[in-house]
Every structure is written in C-alpha cells, then in structure tokens.
Length: 156
Image (cartoon, rainbow, N blue to C red; front, top):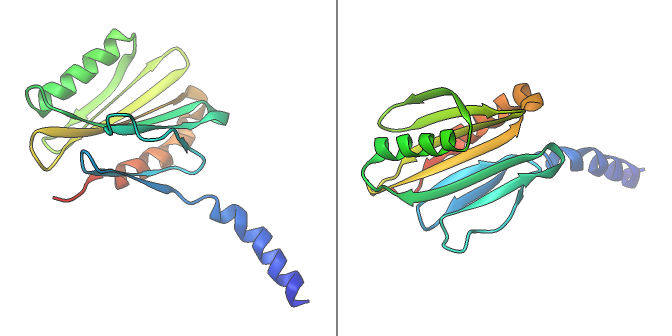
C-alpha cells in the first residue's frame, strides 16, 4: 500500500515540479533573469552577451542580452525604440526612469515587451524582450511580472 501511495504522490507532484521557473545568469554583463516554465534555452551567444529562449507551442520568444552604451542609458533606450519602429512595430507603451526603461509594441498579431536597465559599471546595460501572439495577451501578464521581478544586476 505504501508503494501505491508513493507512486501516486510522484505522479501528482511531477507536473507541479515542471512548473518551476529556471534561472539564467549572464557572467559577461553581470545580470540575472528567471526563465518561465517550458522555455527552451538555445545556449549562450558566441560572444557571451545573452541567450534566446523559445516556447515553441505558443510561438513565444524571450531574448536576454547585455551591451555597452554608445552614449548613455537614455540614448540607448531611444535607439532601441527606433530599431523597433524601423522594423514596423507600432510602439504602444513606453515608460522610463534613470534605473529602468520599458516599451512595448504591436505588429499584426504579434506583441513585444522590452525592459532595459543600466548595469553597475555605468557603461553597460541589460535587456530582455519577449514576443508573443496577441491571443496570449492576458496570460502574459503573470509571465512579464515574473520576468520583471527577477531581472536584476549581479555583483554590484
């Protein structure tokens, strides 16, 4: 009987355990981010600035990366917004402080949300961007909240 109970507990807890977020830390730029359940990492980029994660069944893409300022944080944010506009994304939301910036947009049936922050050295930044289908909009609130809570510099 004990064996049956143990097997039943394993079968019940295994799906719950699969729901845990994983952890990504970037050593080169010193930032960290929790990765939602089901997103598959594609391995660190060749230059070590970040990684891309896919959730194929929902056509979602999460990219995290770091870079160096050409001028300053505000100029970097403005440039990233221009890049998005140049790719025909309609910027629908933007907000910023000296410690972070966020903007999002829509193109056809796709939405993106991007968050950036300056890093401790004062010369670099980290960013994440998640792209998903408009049908997933409501479900993405919790995902974006989790990403935002965990997105932080390390080693300051």
